[in-house]
Amino acid sequence: MSKGKNAKNPYKGADRFTVAAKQQGYPARSVFKLEEIDRRIRLLKPGMHVLDLGAAPGSWMLYTAQKIGRNGKLLAVDLTAIDVPVPENTTFLQGDALSLENEALEMYAPYDLVLSDMAPNTTGNRIGDQTRSFDLFMRALAVAEKLAKPGGAFVGKIFMGPDFQSAQRAARERFSEVRVLRPRGTRRVSSELFVAGIRRRPSPAGSTEER
Figure 1: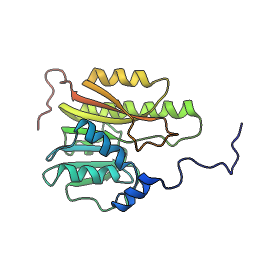
Figure 2: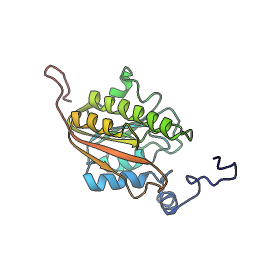
Figure 3: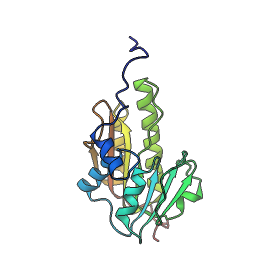
Figure 4: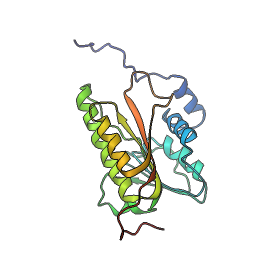
């Protein structure tokens, strides 16, 4: 049954997280999701090298840049331009964040942490949206497998769906510890979760990963 063109969009409108983000100088409420994940897992530390996939509109970029400090390096990537000022310890690359052949992604590799807040453009078809989210998650996980250093970490967004268990298994194959989180900043109507991989397992002998 159609909801009709006048149905209220549950993702529009400012809630307390949106208001707080604007007050603190962040372009989007998503900053509080990363802040909670960081607090619970203690991901970000001064001097780290971080890759931020799907960085627009820039909240995760700004938060991460502040946490890693002037001695850290952050590469933020998105197909969409970012309107907020880019911090001095950050390089923003407008382009395909998922091209493993793109040498630009290796700018600060190997990375201590790979972040992915990427999500598909939703269509209203729940199964289709979940499938596209799974595909994005798996591609981001592949980037982390290639560019994160042994012992490094990964955080990726995924919509809950039939493929979720497969995503968890794939993360466990690559990381010693895997945690699933749903930060308080997530809207109630959202099916999104974050899968965090901690301590990436070493690649086969012969690879060069140290910086």
